[in-house]
Amino acid sequence: MIDFDPGSFKDPSGRVFSQDGSICRTLSPTARRYFETAQRSGLLASLIGDGLLNDTQLVTSASRGLPSAEVGEVVLVQPRIPLVTYSYEWSFEMLRDAALVTLRVLDRALASGYILKDATAFNVLFDGTQPRFIDVLSIEPYEDGQIWSGYGQFCRSFLFPLLLASYRDIDVQPILLGHAGEIPVRQAAKLFRLRDYARAGVLKDIVAQAALDRAFAGSPGGVKASIAGRAYPKRLLVANLRRLLALVEGLRPPSTAGEWAGYDGCHTYSDAERAAKAAFVRRVLTDQPFPRVVDLGCNIGDYSAVALSAGASVIALDLDASAIDRLYRGRPRQPGLTPVVATLLHPTPAMGWGLRERASLLERVQADGFLALALLHHLRITGGVPLDAIVAQLLRIAPAGVIEWVDKQDAMVERLLSLRRDVYDDYTWETFQAIVARTADIVSVQETHGGRRRLCYVRSRQLPRGTPAGLAEPVTVTV
Image (cartoon, rainbow, N blue to C red):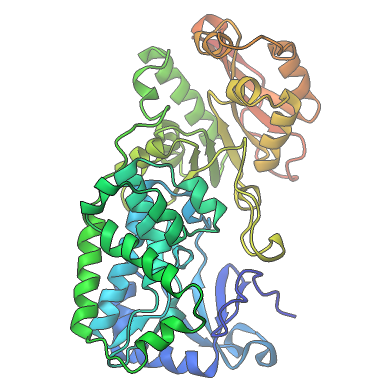
């Protein structure tokens, strides 16, 4: 029996399921007809060739050993994108690029006689740092006089959060998370000031749309009735699309830098210590093959780059969206690197119908190795999470990795403790060692900062049999 994705029930055109490392999708008769005509037109090949659309093939179910009684005679097949992330886990630049991909797909579609029936951010996934449109079944034939029904959804999913971030310097991730990936128009309108009305997009796309939303709120079918029988010339649709493209392209990131985006210029590492830290990480990731590494608290990605150079694919995760923006902008079209705006202290929860429509961050972020550099003291002291819970969580994410221990005598920890009472009696090197020893081995240690910091290669004893041992003998090096 086919195990359909629990988040794919909303579109009657086709259900999604996984098979042999690929993503498959069923097609209704109408969806198949639309797909085949779009394929013959050359539109799909053009979108795939330019990297806008994820590669999509129509194959017979029999060729993949699938039961036609359950999935039909044909299915669509796409390569699996390694990590699914959602718009409330994207930085400003990522959200803007995803919006531009959506608009460019629509632009190409209109030129070929097609249109997008919807425009949700869930239609775009990041393949490394390359956004790709994935919902090929949302491409349907354009009919003369047709309006773009996905406009409102595009605004709620992309335009409103981008305008709020760019014009009002508002952190939109929590708002998007709270509304399942969209910002309602009336809520967006309330967040703009009167003097913002002169700025591009505010009056036309937000204020006017909010007024229409209020006007039709008590009138069932009011919107459909108001446009019934009215033709909307294609030239106006294209003109509005080009206006939106120019608007989104011209938006600038929030002006306020995040707390950690400038950390690389103010941390307490000397050049020699930074080099030794990078060398230790590189040695661990080279001696122990890690196909997939998650860099927790990656900042601007210095050690994500080390992991990439060691041949790993990398999930680079940080709570500071401006730091992720710096990482993302610095590595355009980087395969194997997936930036994520998130934190272990309050990771993205499971959401949607039955809490299965959108998987939680911890369900999605699983790896072979982890980097937890300059992170442990923040989780323990700022977050108040007990050491044993932190270690257990890290080893659930990946069975091995590098943890940086920072003593209370270190300047960064002293700063954390300067405005709070020190109630963290368990935060000692000896306690940390004992906690790790319950389920894992500290295989290698390198001291820095005169012993106030220690880089620890930690390896779970629950690794599958036959996994390479990495650094075989415990060793301590002082820098």
